[in-house]
Image 1 (cartoon, rainbow, N blue to C red):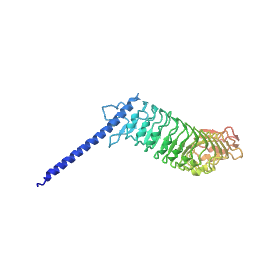
Image 2: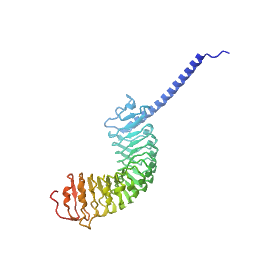
Image 3: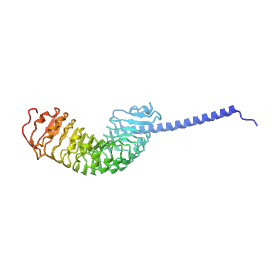
Image 4: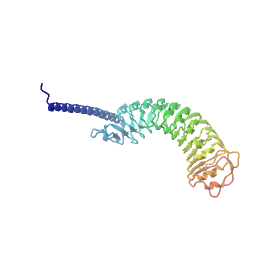
Amino acid sequence: MDLPNIDKVLSMSFSCLATIILLLGSALTLVEAGGNETDWLALLEFKAQIIDPDEVLSSWNDSSHFCEWYGVTCGRRHQRVSVLDLCSKNLIGVLPPHIGNLSFLREVYLQNNSFHAKIPPHFGRLFRLQKLRLNNNSFSGQIPSNLSYCSNLLVLNLGFNLLKGNLPTELGSLSKLQVLILQVNSLMGNIPPSIGNLSSLQKFGLSWNNFSGTIPETLGQLRNLKELRLTANKFVSTIPISIFNISTLASLGVGENQLEGGLPNDLGFTLPNIESIIMYQNYLTGPIPESISNASNLKLIQIDQNNFTGKVPSFSKIRGLYWFNIRLNNLGGEQSTDLDFLCSLTNSTKLIFLSIGENAFRGLIPNCISNLSTTLSIFSLKCNHISGTLPSGI
């Protein structure tokens, strides 16, 4: 029996292999083209829903590939949209559901425009999404709970909109989330305890909403938190002690609520990195902790309009303080040394605002106040029981 010609066998094998490679290449090209067409159509739908008075989207046409359109960035490998950046472009309109078809999208910057209507729940289909900034628009409706499907989300900023309803419990599953800003909306209800599961969270802002109930103890689990802003809501009861144990905390804002109780004695030790304490207009009681002097990074203390009592401690170790407001409390009132703390503030060379008015301070005005910061522009002592004359150096 004749043996097959080796050259012919090899030739046929290579021919088949080449055909397979060509077929695979064609299939991949079709897949990529399909993906490109999906992105192209999604962007055109986005443009169709927008009024663009400054014509920033004039390049969005057939004369160029969409990866070259203004505000669009594509990945090098797949030529799919990875970034949509149209912040502060005076755009007016709504976001179409088709935005959920941009499946390679990682970053969306649409802040500082005039978008309105609801935030499309279709954002929940963007599994690669890392940053979503829709702040400073006019979005209404509720926060889509299925944003929790965006498991790679690092930044979610929906502040300064017209959002209402509750903070979705489901968002507590976003373990990579570092920034959650929802301030200046009309959100309401309780803070879900599940927010304490956001182990990577560094900034959490809910100020100027209608949140109510107690501040959950679980927020103390946020061991990487640097900023906690809950000002101007309707929170009641005490500030959870667990929050004062977040050693990374630099800014604590709980002013303009209905909080009560006192401050922990060791506050200055448990919050070594604290720079800003904002607790004005609550029902807080007790003394200002003496340990506060150990919080040497403090720049702003605003605890006015509460019911704090007792002697004000020294602030001699706090040299960067520029804002100090303790007016409208019940501080002082028992000793001629009530005003000694003012001398410790001479070390704060950047001080521009100092208000101790409407308390129960007694005694003579100390001469040391002539050594207060030369940058001081407001110094209020009104409505106390202070006597004496102002030093000549004032």
